[in-house]
Length: 215
Image 1 (cartoon, one colour):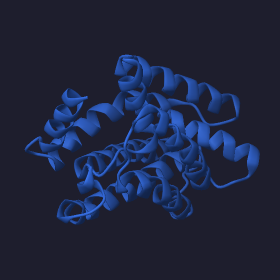
Image 2 (cartoon, rainbow, N blue to C red):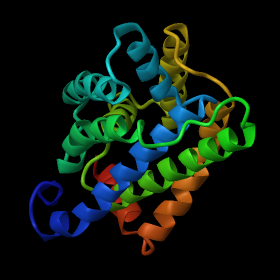
Image 3 (cartoon, rainbow, N blue to C red):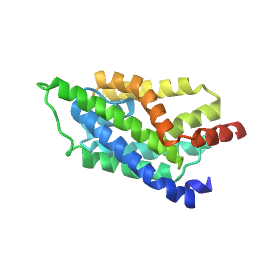
Image 4 (cartoon, rainbow, N blue to C red):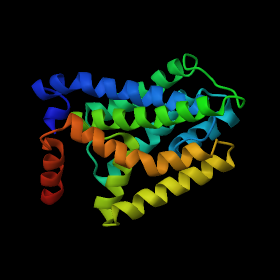
């Protein structure tokens, strides 16, 4: 736990963590500007943004704070990566959206390419931040916290959360489309591949297995 906040391991893995955040944020901006649909949590953030006029990245920060607060009764332990996730990713999204090109509907191949590139970038960024092992993001921690606290299967918890926030976001006016499906089915394999690249010896997975066994 201490290594997630201080020490050589934190310093060594911090650049990879920050690079992961940038990749995830730029990937999110690419999906937003492609206009073909977003991942479930971003659909919710976009729906809230539509109704409040608050920038998408700022909404992500504001939603992340109460989600992180739910960790406390679930017994989840944050790391410096958790706090930086809440503080930085949304800011970078706000900065990236105006910089990423916006292909119009008259350029469907450009839209598809931008959407697919966004999914790949988010997957690679997720692999980088997972390999850093400096603390889960607030939404991932909520999922694992519910699993550990109540014994519900990870798949059931993840599916319930994803479907719930997707439905809420869609009702609020968030963009659901082809990109939503590509993200849902593609992000897992990409993250798994990226984690294999950035955590070649499997150290992160072994540490997590030990922690799960201890709990």
